[in-house]
Length: 249
Image 1 (spheres, rainbow, N blue to C red):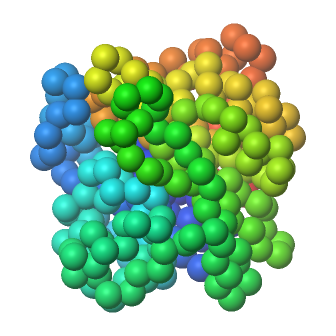
Image 2: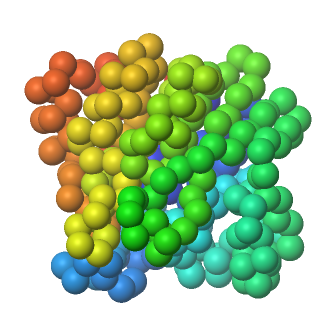
């Protein structure tokens, strides 16, 4: 498989002969509102043109409907007959944007040789959870490919731990920017929680994403690398790709 971090949570992935784009956030730098009052978003430009991000895509996976995961630019640029996978409950909203081929992944979905399984997530804690709403992660499995667990917008909690213990993925993708909401409530993993994932999955490669791109983040790539090194998790166990970087796994 080939895995390319585009920016923030947006990925291009070639897996078992299919090309996926996950959570397309295609806005130009500083063209979207601030989340925390620190800066307009996104903080950086895409590493390529929006057209290049979606070129040749066969599936788009939208984990949830927050604006940094499926933004107006992506909604406008993607052809309306693009096959879209989503979590149950989001399909009507996506259809309202004109898309015609929408498949909610209730539990699992088999397509050709690929099995895609939806996993739970917890996008914060306490009162913030009601505001954040439902989110999902997804597991990809196919013959002659590594099992990949894309955790999505979630903190480290028992649902993530249970998924790792049950499925034993070879690759785990985390959102590790430590974004906060409201009264500084963490809504995705920070450095310590990302290292907890590494410790819970000692035989997995963890790929940390969603950093250096939105203004409510608290953890940068540099912060995470320093924290990981200090806790004995080296670059062979925890990969922190740059925007535009492609990994062959």
